[in-house]
Image (cartoon, rainbow, N blue to C red):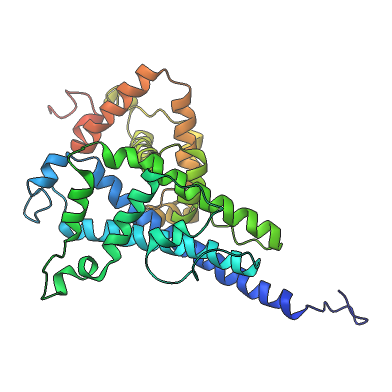
Length: 330
């Protein structure tokens, strides 16, 4: 409504929605960032062998292992991310004045999830959310500070018990996790439209954007990180190839990317410094990942398999792998 001076008159209810819009949009952003950080750590754990987990490969002294702190933060950030994501949906339902079980409070993620009838659920999803709920139980979350550990389980024990000897379980759970996030994001998107607000909008290049939009684009949420790591390696190889003679490079060291794709982030001093700043923070521009994915989509499955295998060489021997065998002979 517009008054006779041209000003917009906003009702109390509209003003409340406007305030909630910005608050819940920020909350969704926070939830997505927590999920990105937590799931990235879970991905890094999941690509290891589960038997190593049982045999103490999380020991801080193991050079190729996972620190116990990483297990804690993987579960902590993932749990916090899901709790906040689910509570955004609860809050929107309250604004919509739709009834649901419970009050939307507390840290029992599984219960919060089961109280929403508008979100699909199954045993696999509930088993994963139960892991996070069990972790948030005080006896596990504060395991190192609890003097009375009778019956308590450490984060590592919870994870090992959950994996139950299946070395592929965490990777396979990526499908389950993607489905949970996709369902909640869809509910938040639909409720936002019904309330005429825009809570669902997050920055594409942020961790939140990569997770919330990635759940729509990938069957397995861990493909977000697999493709991001692949793109990062290809981008670094491309940067090196720009400043070295092609005759010096091995076949592997020659860039797959168009110079234009690489130069897009180097055109000006600002672009270059901004890209370096993002890379230092572990943020790879989405356009680079999309560009690499486009190149890979034109390759045969055998070519993709071989290229990804050779990228492992780059991870372990980043310099030697890029150049011809006789490059260092002099």
